[in-house]
Length: 165
Image (cartoon, rainbow, N blue to C red; front, side, top):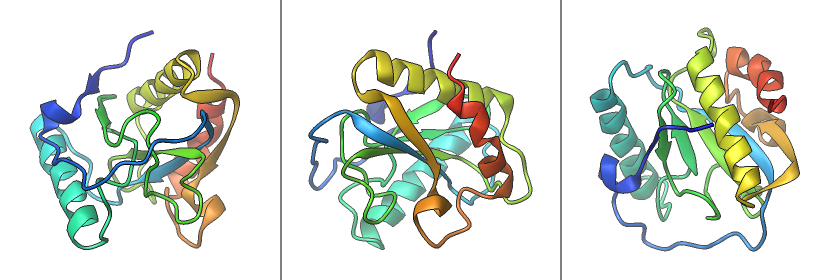
């Protein structure tokens, strides 16, 4: 059960200003969308990922990109902060969770089956490697904050991610 993970080095991530590690395996997975256009190629995905990281670091004063992982429509998974690192994706809820963002705007578009499958596989890997508790909770960003994120269509697809078989 492999997932194509594009490392920080491969997408040209900036070095984080600071990094805090989670003190235990993640209890919650929080799903987001980037609310940007869907990227058709890896090059477009990398350009958008660099833009997101730059925006998070320059304008939101984050130490790094806010998400632990970002997934593109073709199922490619980009390492954001990665496993075991405290993110900056859901205010007040980062110390025991991992944030996974889907590239695109899912208010009207549906997430691709490839992206959903990759995230399901990523969750299985995270549990098997001890980064995520087996009985983790799965939330859309809007469950924990006043936002429309992760969009209506992605939010309605969350039950597909809960079944990790």
